[in-house]
Length: 344
Image 1 (cartoon, one colour):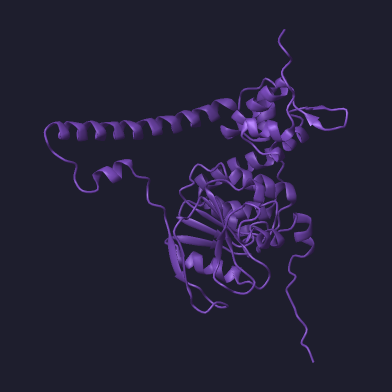
Image 2 (image 1 turned 135 degrees about the vertical axis):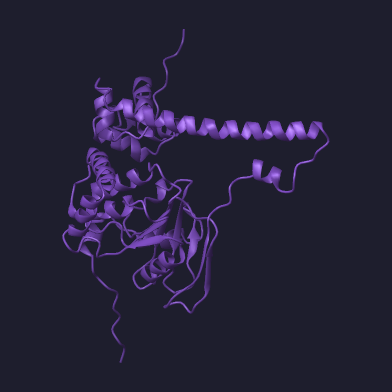
């Protein structure tokens, strides 16, 4: 007699599905999954719930928002067509790249059969990984002009540091050093979003991209606001090769911050890196940092910024964690500056 399939704890279910326990809680909050409860009140996922969660994960990887996922699971497949079309295009692009590589390998084999060795560097270009983009700069005040080099720019690069650490000047200097980069400062919505609206009126394709992003974000629980529209106008602009954002959470509530990070992780153009300065734990959830993300930490003692791994026990991890606060705390302390009274 076959024994019944075991129930899984949230951590076991998350590991099997390749997501975080936090993602499972979010699915539950939105009514997408309903785990059972043990006698002690702990969540337990039956095989049926695991299968449903796997469908949710697959739909999310296709780029659907939680609202779109709910509609698809409810039998409305309207949102699924465009998502599958985008996925098909991605696969076709990869197929064309792979076909080009196969042809190169065939040519090399044909040359070898005729006694012709590959040219210098040809094999490394064929088999090696693309070189990572990097940046080098002299650190501004409050540093002393030390040279800073980042050899591995990721799709998302978080900039963190305590008050007075110089992280704002570091971000500004990065925007100057990165070729073609732009800086989205704290004044991005100071005119009530008029500048963003003017850019959208002048560029219909920009308006279309912003509207599509807003639709997705609202489906994730974000609240539409002038601050969000102004931020998207800078992020969605086609011109810059990199974007540096000063305090990305400015003017955004908790749900909007979480939706925004989820949106940025599903971008179609990860080749354009984003540098996000933040002190919000909703923007930088240390447990959710992915493989194509990096944390740049500016220490309080003004030693050069360092790369910090998002793992407890790694150098600098605790210092980064103490710099982050929930959006509610960040809202209460916005504009507060560090001040130390003079001693007699």
